[in-house]
Image (cartoon, rainbow over the protein chains, first blue to last red):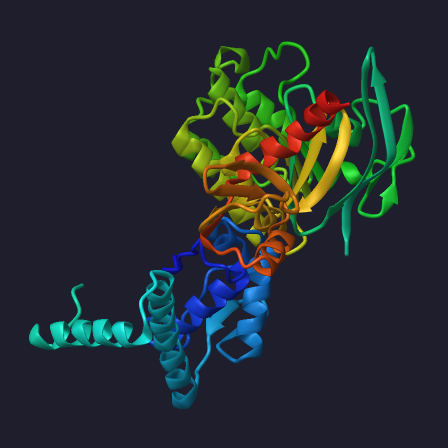
Length: 135
Length: 292
């Protein structure tokens, strides 16, 4: 199976970390439910055009943190994870996205007050449209 | 680390061409891509490994056992796809298959047929009558279906059409997935092969061994920075080039420390493409020659 993982060249985070974070988000959001068979390290490496050294590291960390588990001879599967862990990942993913937006604004020399106003503008715009972001 | 193949102090002279000395370990379970310009010695290196060319100095080992000229053990564990067969081959694909299957105890007929079907290889035709691309596909199927532990491929995807190239890579991935210890060493000029398959890169430059690199570590070090404000007057660590507002370096980590210390910021940092990195590696020698 293909995973909807997209590595960003401009992201300063190491590649294995990007793979880990995106897998966690896919698992926490339920896009990859518990029990899903994941691609082998070799085939994910091909898809992402990285070495198996990088992919293996990501899988090892995810396994250590309990997001996935490997059954000898059968493959690697999405593990059952606690609701609290799911929530933690979701909150941290959203916060990271907001932090990134704020960093962009700071780079464009906006003050925190101005950024706050922009953020509220975006929220109010969404509320007016019925609370859904454009797909 | 398990070694699939190793070269120790290998040297070879052919007329005025000198290869080596080369010390190289091919790790089991990984894909190593051998790159370099035409005539860099890639094919010669593979032939030395296969005992088809005798080195002047040094030794070759497979799976930890040094070849002493008598051991034949490795021959069922290693399959080699040459760039071209020596001399004309007056056989059909079918005949070549029979010959190959007879000689190789792990021959996988089902898989061979699957590849033949996918690539639509006409087995009834004489090998010489096939186009270069189809010859290549047949050689590929004849090599991979031997089901060895180590595949040594000399430019497997050259002359091959785009969909079949992609299919070859997928066949190799399928093959690798079946056992953790399966290993590939391939000489290639195709960036796509390296991107999708390789874990390690071995770079040869005019017979010289430039080094063995972890693919992702290598590319993470080569970056281009779009600098905000003025460029630093001093040379940045590993600086490769600078243009209007842009600096490229081969030591990203040190360069970032250097820039930060001087309060210089950048709007974006983008890793160089793999082909650019390889080109820079292969240019280095020329530049130093010019300077001296």
